[in-house]
Amino acid sequence: MTLFLIFDILGTAAFAISGAAFAMQKKMDPFGVLIIGFVTAIGGGTLRDVMIGKEPVTWMTHLPYVYTIIIAVLLAITFRKKIGYLSKSLFLFDTIGLGIFTITGTEIGIQNGLHPIISVSLGMISATFGGVIRDTLCNEIPLIFHKEIYATACIIGGIFYVLLTYFQVRQDVNFLLTISIIIAIRLLAVIFHLKLPTFYN
Image 1 (cartoon, helix red, strand yellow):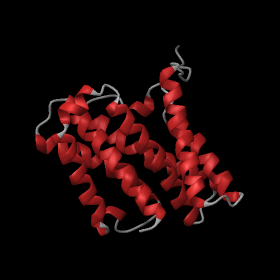
Image 2 (tube, rainbow, N blue to C red; image 1 turned 120 degrees about the vertical axis):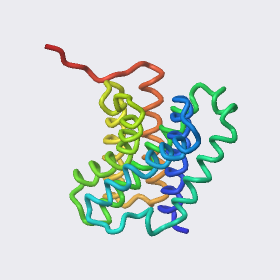
Image 3 (cartoon, one colour; image 1 turned 90 degrees about the vertical axis):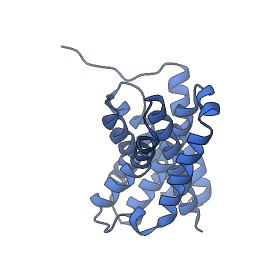
C-alpha cells in the first residue's frame, strides 16, 4: 500500500465519520446516516475524477474506499454517545479530512500534468465539495460559502505542497507538513475567530 493510498483512505474515513456525525445531529435514521457519510466521503473525489476525465471514478473500482466508509459510519453509530460528548468531534474529523483530501487532490493534479494553479484548485475541490453536498442535502448553507476560513486553508496548504514538490522535498515529509499547515490554519481560525470579510450593499 502506497503512502498516497494510506492518506487517501484516512481522509475517506475522517470525512465519513464527519458526515455520519452531522447526520446523527440532524436525527436521521441509520440509512440517512450512511448516505450522508458516504456522500461526504466521496463527493469531492468524485467531482475531481469527473473533472480530469477519469472513468470510472476511483471509489467504483477500488472497493477499500467503500469498505472504509461503511466501517467508519458503523463505528460512528456504535460510539455515537462518546462522539456526542466531544463537542469538537465533528469539527476535528472534518478538519482532518480537509487537510488530507486537499493534498491528495493536489497531488493527483500534479500527476496528471496540470498547471500548479489548477492542481491547487483541484485539491480544494476534492476537500470541500463532499461537505457542500452534505450540507445541501441536510438543508444547510454549505460551510465553504460562509465567511469562515475553510477553502482558504485548502488553497494555502495546496500552494505549500506545490512549492515543496518543486523543491523536491520527500513526499512523506511534504504530505505531513502541508496537511499539518491546513489543520493548523483551521484550528487557529476557529480559536481566534478569524474570518474573511463580507460585503454588503
